[in-house]
Length: 189
Image (cartoon, rainbow, N blue to C red; front, side, top):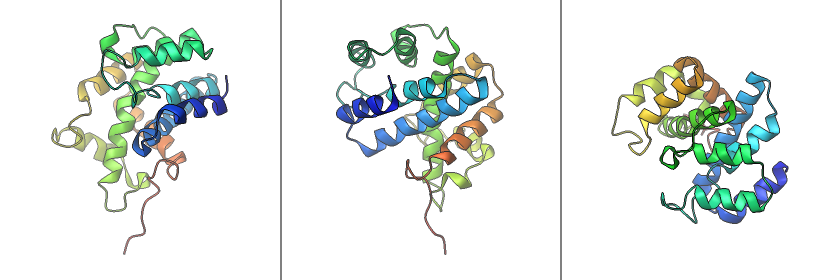
């Protein structure tokens, strides 16, 4: 199991640039948290990278992430990783009973939301996003309406972290891959 194999699997199933950007963002968030918790950065990053890899092919709740878990099993990915990926979708009923699973759930929706916040900034840059602006956008339910705010709050609670610190950690992680996820920004003026 290595990132090269994970990347090949992701790009075999995912063609959408926005879904690839999301996968890279969640990978960055997971790597950041792995460093924070003193865990295996590669393992955690791959978990984030692959959490939605088959979503484009199987976007409905009957299939996602079930089909992905089956594919990952055939490809030899570990059970702990597959369970964390299953648990990131609340409707599966798979408990998030490991730090890996709790972190993936806490990072996933928030990373997508923060990316949306960055994209509406005049600069379109993650470097201009602050936790305060993310929290303000949480209150605007028409903004990024598909993002499940209750799951963001639940993820923060399950992980047992401060909301502002968690938002800042995910922003910091996304800044590290800004160019890769299309959020480096545009020149102003």
